[in-house]
Length: 232
Image (cartoon, rainbow, N blue to C red; front, side, top):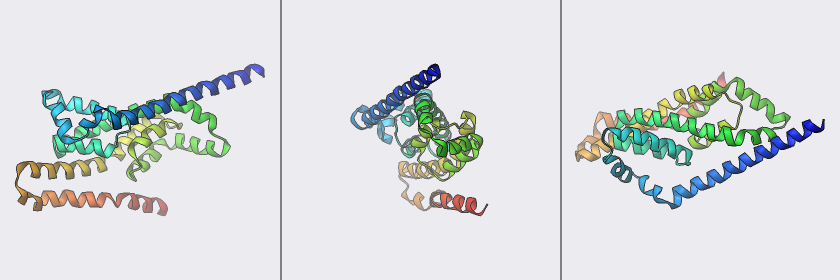
């Protein structure tokens, strides 16, 4: 009995220490993004200058930049917009999707490694059933949250605190972000191409209106998904 209590106490202390490390990590990440030279690369011009000298390695560096940004709490929409502006609508979509998947995975493992033990110690009987439900329905839960545009970075870390299986999270994320990522990269990349060409008449082209229409439609996706879910 005493050994069991001691082991439980040590487990909680270890979980608390990991949670404190996670909190310090998050605070340092926010500080780095707001008050260091990283801010200079959070514009299309700044990041383009950094990637210009990389040649064929530029896509790899951008993907690594996306992964780091996702772990440093840089908004996913900003990272996606930078990729679309630099690489265009189609290659941009590919690089953004790969970077988002790797970044989401890395942030998930940070949350799982540093925060899961402490989160588990706080879960009472009422919350335990939800934690178990997420484990059973991890793919569907992740897919739904991605489709309704739950904030990208908080969700990456937050899902790591739950019992969801990594591969359920991974495939739910991969499928769930495809539509939104494609629409955003298509719109930003298309407008950037027109702006770069100097042909302002291109702003009234079918391609621009099509991408704009998809962007507007994307804002209604969460409501459509919630309505469908409510009718099932």
